[in-house]
Image (cartoon, rainbow over all chains, first blue to last red; front, side, top):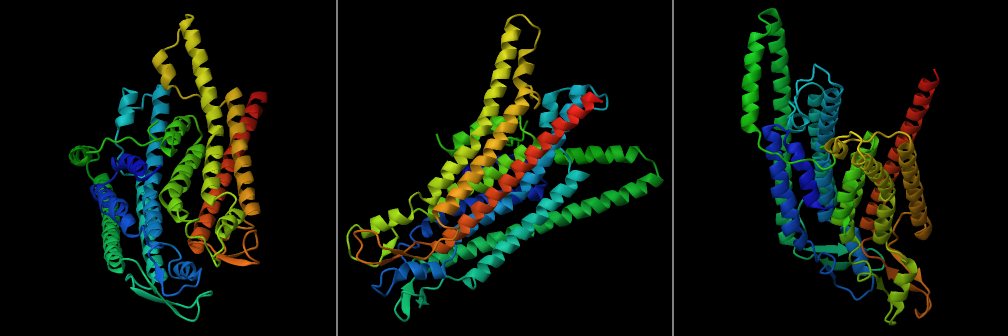
Length: 262
Length: 222
């Protein structure tokens, strides 16, 4: 179970996302997870080994390292990425539940069920309306919260986003005050700022998606209120066809979700 | 055979689980196994190399490390995750046996569609209910046992910065310093919390199954 498996799971969610959601997922995987795995982990790889203190006192280096780096940047990013990806699974679970209900209806022979085949149910793309809208919107909300919390935790724990070259340590058993030198501080600062920037872009994408969903919801409601006064069926059918065409154009992913596809 | 293979094996069990069971499996894979693989293993990676003792005595560091860390946290978690995942295989075996019996009846001439058989979701009733419930029970027992073993072996869940060692050949008492104690404490508490959540999910699933069977029984009698 590693980042590849998470990619497979979230790829399935992609099918039911909005266009902004798909962009967010791409940015997450390429500019955050991939950067973490191929670059950042090497930069932080020797962080304790090359953390050098100007003392021969055994244990002083360990204690100073622990004091200045309670949780390593890499681990914080890994936790952030996992927490930020997870709300999308709520959407996957909701979709799987709906599919399960439709399959049950189909098996019972319900005439309301418009599908001719169980394969059609499996491939169906659900539109983001009704209860799924609420699930999807809550998942975006939670993503925003988690992103903000982790960015704040970073800022609080490391007193900003810059990695200093030198730290002065006077924790026991270090004698008096000892100078300790961090390994690759400039490279670490560059990557920290990069990851913060991409995190902010992801927050903006999530806010945009939230606004888009809210706007869509209110427009739909006002159209329904308007339509109920005029002709009930004709305009809705045309609008539905146009929406379906738009969705077909924007739909691209056919990945399956592990454990949820049944 | 690694965590990916375990995921493939348990993914099949997922089809026959309740909704709570599916949530439990997701939590297990994403918040426990994945955290273990991508984060915790790196934190504990240099645990012996950066375990430093204030002495030049050869062998003292080895002996002290062995004395304070009889089994590393990472190995204990790996064992816990394997033991906790395994009862689900009882369910998989039972389902496979049920299918095998149906196929045998089909071959003996009874009219059953073999494709439908393969894709059929088997309901949690009768002997499968007992198998499923025992598997949840064993999961809960294994979780509790490992949580207790952790607590007993490491005298709580906090990783100290300094441990004082008097084992031979260390001269008198020697100060030994653990590598990354704060980060280790954070991850220990995180894994403990998720373990607690998994236990709650298992208890909820057990209650759900018991209530379901009691309601079914009461419907039958009325």
